[in-house]
Length: 77
Image (cartoon, rainbow, N blue to C red; front, top):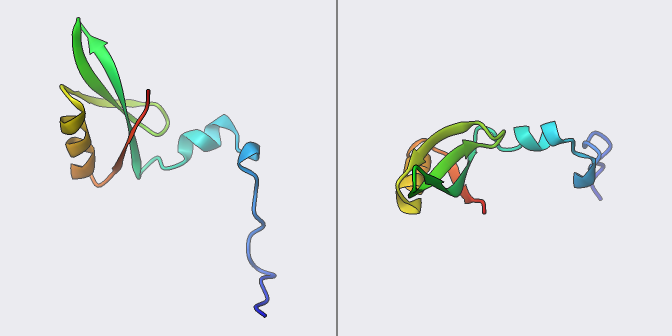
């Protein structure tokens, strides 16, 4: 049996604050959201904290841009 006395205590996800959620994956995840810009369908790209970091004409281009910057794209609707 392994002694885990120094292991951090698990926390419930319900205990995370909105700021904790905003920081979660900040450098690893980019959220993609379909939008309409000036009457044209596009995809908005946001950092985990909601900061707008770009836009692309379609989902494939948005995902490719995110992967190019070594982040994981996540679709939000």
